[in-house]
Image (cartoon, rainbow, N blue to C red):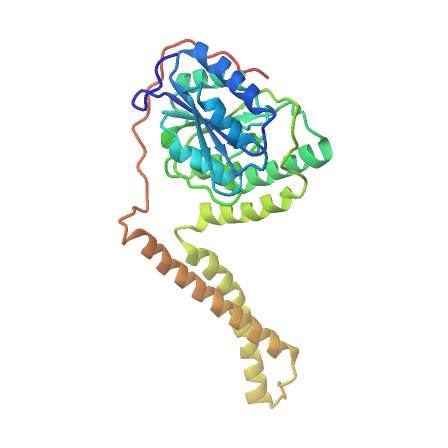
Length: 335
């Protein structure tokens, strides 16, 4: 293996860690066994998300004999998205690989994915697909299938498996992507807004041998809430008036129409409108519409405050198209 200097580093592998003390030693052994034969320079960034077991201590001990291991320790439990962001911020490789620390992802798939990325210069992200997933159907596979269908439909980036952590990124494809909350599963969709090209490849998946899963069926609701934010982010971030203003006008027009009808009845027909339900409905719709339009105006002001003082551009330029290589086709990853 070539010396891992920041100037020559080819691959950074980012692994969020939370209470994986029983899996860490085997994880490092498998990653090393997969990467050393490739001849690539690499590093492994394990981000401990304030584990309550001995994961952090074990990482510190393992790092003393493994110069390619670079542990990071979060001061409290922030969640997987923040742990991944910390790993992205620390990574210096031209290619960034992510996988889980529970050994359900197979590090042996990484060399094949790296070779495939070399052979496909037009591709920026390779997303793993756990085609033969080794999880329970009701509380893991079924919610995941529903969530993947919703995410694909609403974001326009169609993947079978957004939840698979094994992904390969060109570093420039995620340079402008910042993930908050639990947005780590949406990284391909978020990167696509910056022009990243995404493909999906079947990868191996194993049943969990040690420890407990950190996910359950309750995460489906959180995925839906995050998806609403991602949909807004992708479509309306630079034009909030189209979102809030459009909804506001939709409410404002019928509200004004209802009030107009009541004014005509009062002035020309002498009707008593004080107790009419239509009056309450008209006032409510009008007030809600005005508030939404006002929110759209405030959103437009905030967008300009965000971009102009810091000199941020409202657009990104794409690099010149990469030329296809002439090397032989990469072998298919394990499935």
